[in-house]
Every structure is written in C-alpha cells, then in structure tokens.
Image 1 (cartoon, one colour):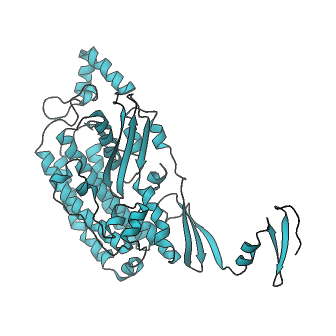
Image 2 (tube, helix red, strand yellow):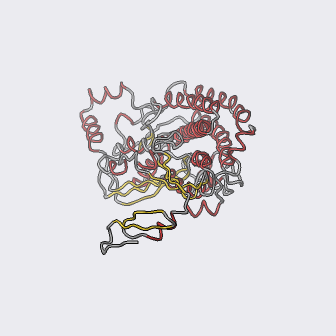
Image 3 (cartoon, helix red, strand yellow):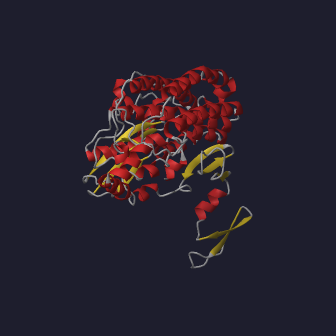
Length: 440
C-alpha cells in the first residue's frame, strides 16, 4: 500500500490480490464494497409507473429493495410564489393547476380561506354547487388512480375501463363549468356563474351510468386472483406509520383510522349529507384499492343529495357585496344568473359608475383585511390545506399549500424497503401522487 499526504490524491490498495484506486483514503468503504452485491438504479424520472415526472433512487440487493428515495422537483412551476403577484381572484387560476386531477378541490380550499379572511360566506346555492362539483371531481380522480394502477400492473382492460368512466366525469364537468380541467369556476364569494340549463338531467344520467358500470370493476379486478396476489400484503403501512409520516386520505383510512375532514371537521355543509366513510384494516395496496372503489359509491350518494338540494334552492351564486363581486356576477332577479351578456352590455351602456367599478375590481382586485388563516378540505388524496397571509392589500403576502401528494409521498420508502422491486410500482400506484401538486 502506498499513500501521500494529500487527502484528495488517488491512493492504491491491494486486497486479496485485487488492486483498487480510491480518492480521499476511504478505506473502510472500499473494503466493505468488495463484498457488497448491491446496485443502485434509477426508476424515472421518465417512467410510466412514476405518475408524472418522479425519480426513485433504489438500492437493490438482487431484486430486493434495501433503500428507496424520492427525488422531486422536475415539475416545479412556482405556483405558490406566483400567487403573491396576482389578485385574490386571479389566484384561483393558478391553484387549480396544482393537482390537475382534482382542480376543484384546490379552488374550493383556496376560496374558503379567502372568504374566511374577508368574513363572508358564499350563498347556499354556491356552497351546494361546490359540493356537487367536488364529488364529481373525486370520482374522476379515483378512476384515474384505478386506471393507471391497472396499466402499471399489467391489467390493461382495467386501464381502458377506468379512463372510459373518467371521460364521463370530465364531460359532465365540462358541461357544468365550461372546461374539462383548470376550471377557475369557484371564485372568492361563490361561483363564477350559475349552472347551465339542463344540468340536473345531466347529473342524474351520470349517476345512473356510474352505478351501472361500477360493478364491472368488481368482476374485472376485485375478485381477480392475479390482481389480488399483486396487491395483497404489498406496500404495508400500519396506522402508526401513517401518523408518524403525516399520511392522510385513503392511505390512512385503509390502515384503520376513519379520518375524513368531511365528517370530523365539516365544511361546505357536509354535515347535512348522509354518507359513510369507508375504512379498512389491512393497510396494504389491495385495501387502498378497495377503499377508493367504495368512496366512489359514497360520492354518488352525495352527488344525488346535492343535486336535489340545489334544484330546490334558487338564489344567487355570488355574495351580494359590491366590494367583492364583479357587477356582472351580482344576481339579476332571483335566479342567480347575473353574469349574462345582456347585463354586461347594460353596465357598459347605461351605468358609467358600474363600468368603472367593474374595471377596477377586475384589474386591481379587492382588498382583504390583514391576517392569516388555514383552511383544509378532504381531497381525493387526503388533507388539502391552504395557509393564506394578507397585509390588507389586493394581493396575498403568502400562499402556502399543505399538499397531500407531497406529504403522502414520504410513505414510499416505508412501503417499499424490504420488498421486491416489482412491488415498488404497486406501492407508488396505491399512494396515487400527482406531481403537479408535489412540486407546484
């Protein structure tokens, strides 16, 4: 063995007839590595099983995962920071792009926080409409989880069926809000506009179609022996592990804790709706799959109740406050359909004061009293919370999001280490992370 005084010089060591070159004199690591059969591989960032641009660094011994790490940030868009340079209303168009599978939930959570700072409540019709849209959105999000999970594990028919039903949810959201995603339909104070004519019949058709097709998933996946073998006893994470890592949503409920903010901390009038909180105790990938299917059935119950309530609740969908609502959003008569083209023409042609007021609200925004608030909703992936800080101006000082995909992704090593590399795919699929929300 030869050595130099330079700590960073190349050094040579001979062990059992093998010559190595090492930098920095790390002899212990070198001697250990001679008998180490582990290999480090990258799964992603471009990989069909990473639910977006996610990189997993896996240390393997054979096909067994000894260590797993998540590398995130590839989809960072600076949404939280961008909100500080936009008005309170314009912020909706940013937050809706975080979790692109559940945009309505981001809009509602953000607007509830703004309304709490303002000290106002959205009209009852708007609140019911928010519940209706969130549950339709929840179904669409869960269907994507089932579809992508099936694709990643080889159940391609599950993938085609899941996306087929999800398309029905997107069609309905497009009919109700005007867009398939990134809706910006929920606004501080209520909704951008009332639902279009014929909305009730469309909602009833959607519920009937979903109730007809959901049993097919039990035939195709739930009772399928191969599907069960790939998911049962895989990705195990008990309730104490969930609590230690901050996991919420289906991951926590599949471990035995029925924690659902719609029940434990109701918002948007969820206490008025009859529905159950599905729960399991197996705490594995199969339990999370079964739980999401059960949640779709519960969402259909809520959608039916919300549709009936909204049909029986005429009225405005925006607060009657000229300091917050654009004049074109204020109700005309009693039907809440205030933002019609005729009303905008009336503002422009007959009322200079309303036109100036409308222009200032659109360009400058409304002022929000100073303070800070945290508001959370139960998104398809768990607790989605918004912490907003205001200094009394027309723009937020700080917007910070407690994004469930970001928090839940911490459970990946606990679910994967000690298992097979093929089971990492099942574990990540059961977490159902959306990288737009993780990186935001």
